[in-house]
Image 1 (spheres, rainbow, N blue to C red):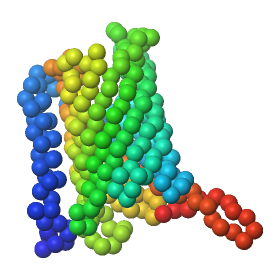
Image 2 (image 1 turned 135 degrees about the horizontal axis):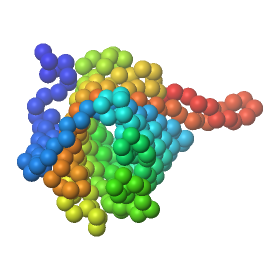
Image 3 (image 1 turned 180 degrees about the vertical axis):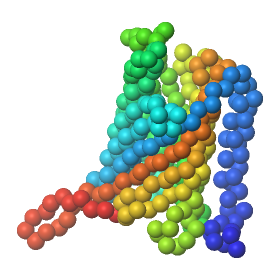
Image 4 (image 1 turned 90 degrees about the horizontal axis):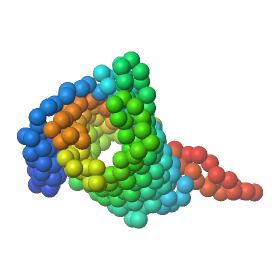
Length: 268
């Protein structure tokens, strides 16, 4: 029977479903105010690394590339670095900085505007049966370079963005290398003196699979619906997005040797 295969039942999933329904309700309220909607097709891919350097400390490094019209046009490149500390089995914190290069077009000319970010993150994880549930809270301080009439300026728009993601990974087999089901929803809100009409930034709803490749390398792939409100407040983007994210989690550990101690790169 399918519920037993997924190691889940309605009672244990009820809190998760309530949270997802709340986020979708918020998303639908924003959608009802839609005046102009631009529909786009995008492809997002990234490499997310989490390098363990001590029992509680890790170095984080991510690279992201997003493309519009699936593969045809560059949307942006993004590089993010940080460090994470594991408080206990369920709770970890992280902080770092990122740099984004956003593609713009003026006629036939393509150019890139800059965005610099700082971020702080709290992640709470636990299990429901055999499934893994992650709650991620992130705060971002963002400096975005303004483009006026197709020309880069030296003026930057500052905003603070608040992100909450709930993600559920549901195994369908006890075998480690059989793909599992991945479901996630993230809502993003923002504030700042330039944020007047779009305090709701966007919502990202994802469904797909997660696949373990090696003990240290995995990926998730699937469909994501991104609904984003633009600065005007009455203009929205609805992005039908194919997503492919890789996750690499190696470990730098001290290996005891007979005559010396050295660092070795191992996979866990």
